[in-house]
Image: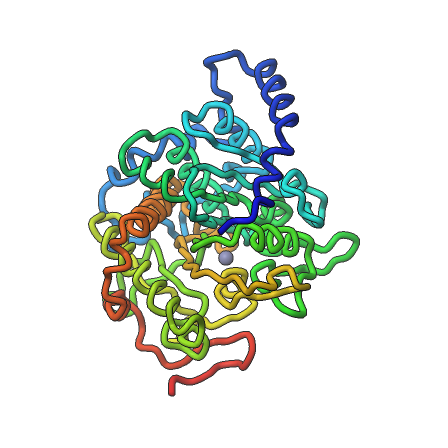
Length: 408
Ligand SMILES: [Zn+2]
C-alpha cells in the first residue's frame, strides 16, 4: 500500500546520522545524557514528568490552583522548549532508544520545498515497523508549546517501552511524529509564520487550500503527507481558559474535530466514515481520561454553541483529501482529531506549574487513542455518545467558507 518513496529520506540520511552520532559522542561523554536546555529549576524535563502526571491532586472547579493553568499562572516562556532544545532531544532519542527511532529533515526526505520561511529545517521522527502510518503533529501554532513536549515524550515511550502495549503499537503502526510544525513561530512565540522578506503573517493551520500554500512549511509538510498517506492522525493545540458549559468547572482539555460531526461537511466525506470514526476516537479518549480526577474535559467549540467547520485547516484538508498541484492525484484522505490544552502563552494563562500535568494529559490522550485504534476498541464505540461529552447545545457552525451556518 505504501510507496517506497517515503523511505528514501531515511536511507538518504544514513551518512548524516553517522556524522551526528560522532559529534554527539564528542560533545557528551557516554552515559551522561545532555540535559534539555531551557528548563527552569522548578520545571523538570517533560520526560521526567511522565510518571507523576496524576499525583498532584484534583483541581476540578479550581482554576486558580497552583497546579492548574490560571490567569495568575506566572507564565514564563523562557522555560518553553526552543527549536534547538527540540533538535537536541530528537538526536538524543535517536541515539538512545531501544527501538529504532529515525530522525530526519524534510530536505533529507527529498521534499522539493523543505524548510521553514526563515530557512529552518523541518523535522520528522519515525518509530514503529507497522504497515499503517499514523500522523502526529504539534505546535503548528508557534505560541502553543506543549505539543512539542507531548510528542517528544510519546516518541521516547514508543522508542523505549518494551511492554506488550507498546509492542503492539510498533508492530501495527509506523508513527510519523512532527514535534514542531512551525519552528519560526515557535522561536518568536507567535501563532503564525512570517513570510520571508515580508511582514505578512500566515496561519499555517489555514494554509492547506486550493488557493493557499502561501508558506513554505505548508507545501513541505503537504508533500510529505501525500507520500506517507497516513491511516489517521492527531493535531495538538492550546486554548484559553474555559469552563464546562453545564457545570462551570474549569476545563483542562478539550476534544475536537475541525469538520463538525453531523455538520455541513463531514457526513459527506467517504460515505460518513470519518463522521463516525472521529467521534468514536474522541468518545474513547473521553472515557479513558475520565478516570483521572485531574483531567476535566469537554468538546471543543468556538463559543455561543458554534461548532468549528473549517476546510482550510491542515487536518480538515487531510479529511477532504485535498489534491494540490496533482500531488494527491489518487485522492488519499484520512480522519484526524485534535486536542486543546487549556492555558496559553498569549493570555499569560499557561500556568507554569501546571506544565507537567498539561503535557501528561496530552500523552495519555495520545496513548489511549493509539491503543484503542490498535486493539479495535475504538471501532466498537457508540459514536452517538459524542453527545455525552460536555458541550453547549449546538446552534450552528462557524465556517471558513460560508460564515456562520445555522443548524438545520
Ligand atoms: Zn492552535
